[in-house]
Amino acid sequence: MQLELELAGQRWELSVPDEELQEVHLPVLREIRYPSITDGWLSPEK
Image (cartoon, rainbow, N blue to C red; front, side):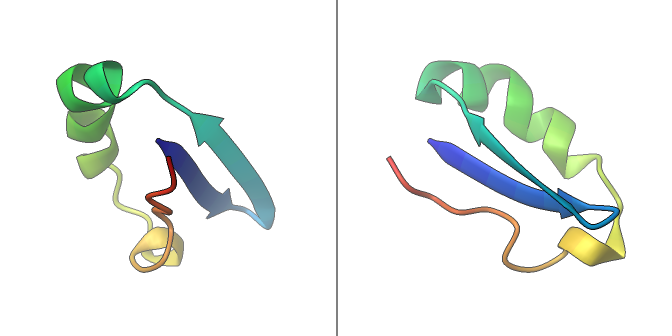
């Protein structure tokens, strides 16, 4: 899965294996509370 997020004017593109994403990254990402990434910051491209 490709993840795209923009923080402080910088765009980050992450490529994460689905099994790692489900087990680790999504629970961590859900803890993030930045108004700048509340919509459109996840790009579900495989």
